[in-house]
Image (spheres, helix red, strand yellow):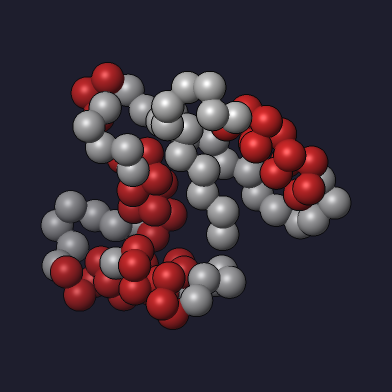
Length: 90
């Protein structure tokens, strides 16, 4: 899994790095996700990624912590995410 966070100082080559990564992945099976934030969440750099994970796992506000963990484990089990990385998501 590769995650690029674009909210980094300007002028350090993010666009060039992204273009090189996309060129490298062109022949590999992959899924490209683009995330955008909005002003109300500007202090939470991972806000769009957390929202995507919540939607993918089907998390509900009224789920208890164990139910949320079970749902997250189920969705990550469908990927190549290592157990160590899965624990970081939790």
